[in-house]
Amino acid sequence: MGSKGADLWSDNKLQKLVSVYLSEGETAVLEQFNLSSETLNRYLREARKRGISTSDKGKLISQIIQNYTDKELQALAHGGRIVPGYGKVPIISFEGDRIRVGAMTDTHIGSVKMPEERIYQAFDEFRKEKVDFITHSGDVTEGMSNRPGHVYELNAIGYSNQKNLSEKIFNQWTDTDIYAIDGNHDRWYIKSNGAKIVEEIAKSIPNFYFIGHDEGDISLKGKATLKLWHGEDGNSYALSYRLQKILESLTGGEKPHAMIAGHVHKYVEIFERHVHCTSVGSMQSQTPWMRGKRIAAHAGFAIIDYWVNDKGI
Image 1 (cartoon, one colour):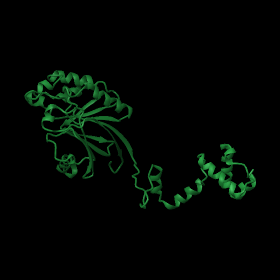
Image 2 (cartoon, one colour):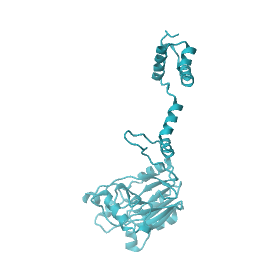
Image 3 (tube, rainbow, N blue to C red):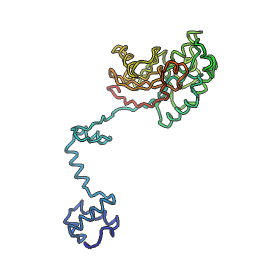
């Protein structure tokens, strides 16, 4: 048998040879299969070529267990990597309840730069990823300003038309609750005639909740606070600077654990003052006004996973 080539052996026979080799040792294999040491090594090489492991996994696992702490082994079990030159496993093992948020903002419903199909695409992704709820960080509607030419940028003109279109769109989402604040564009109706358009939209949609003007808080399982923020400031010279200044303005007791911001149509994510902060971008594309001011629009939405435990997020 020792003179026959390894290629004449079936995978099944090679697996049996490897099994004996791993469980009983080399001597047992040589005796049972009437092999020489040289032929055995050739068969083991052939087994590895065919994807048959010739390593004693139990022995290897025992060696790994001896070299790592329980916490590091837990991290390895969750996908941690052993990086050459590092003594520890560089991974955070997440513990707690996962809350998945579908975050959108600045839909500016009524603007020609906001096709409603884009919101339905976001709903499709939220549904596919099974979000726990949706947030909207303000400027639900485009509003009506006194800016010259603004009326020509609208496909729904006036309070009633923008309110009706918003209700039509958000009524398409029935999977979870939607939590929203208003923004400066929505408040143009308050300034002009006292009409609170986002509050009125919420009254007509059972799962749509208005939680505040410009900002509002959501409790995550009673363990952490998620703040929605809009504001009336402008773009900053660096994407992160605006979020940093917002967080600096909050006193210690008022700081949330996480914040989802809108208004400036920019996507950026930072961790500042122990707050996980995301500026989501906008659902609206760049408008003529933004182009004239040389302001880019980061169009899109976000799906954010928060892991909440007794220590926060």
